[in-house]
Length: 264
Image 1: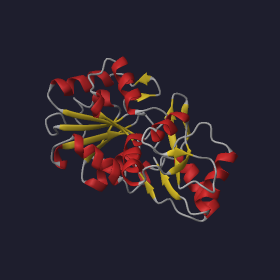
Image 2: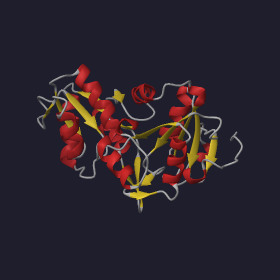
Image 3: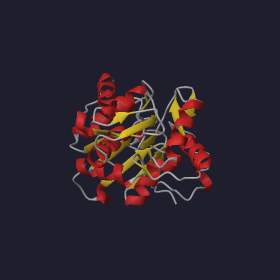
Image 4: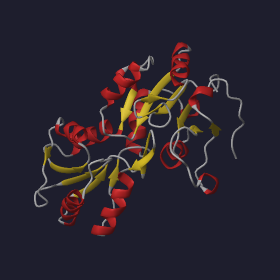
């Protein structure tokens, strides 16, 4: 694979690391690719930290990484909001770090449904009934309905936890209104941000991730080869899914010397 592709997109959570634990051998793979002059970008739908937080984490693993090689959905959505809704009042079902990231772009946080203009849903480990109701009432009053990511679960060391997709479904049923836009994988917004970093033809890019409906789906949508790893979330419907990876590999540790044939 190292000879076929000149650019590599790595999902982070479940592919390179799980929480603050490195996937064994991941640093050797990344550093070898960089030594060979390959372009590398890291992507994540997780919003509980900033892209800079990920940079510090990867550096702590002795991975050769630059800050501008990391893209998470917080970065993507805050650029969109700054350009299209400057100064707007928003409510987020999300954690404090995510809210802070949006506020840095000049938007104003509010928990008053009568003045909220934008509702944003993302991973929130402090989710409660009150947050759901504030968001629902704002959406019913006409607030825009956005999500930073649409993952149903997020990988953690002891399994998986509930993520934004479950909350989105609850709000859609509660309000009878559909999510308008999302900004993580597999969205066009995330892909466009990636392409600002990778100046190469799509046929020369390989995307490596652990989730069919986000990582592998994005590759399929935009014509990029993909490798599905088994170190992150459980793809329960893998055999029955219409979303197929180009390759299936145990982990990124074997990426450089793996000799698997294409799937399908």
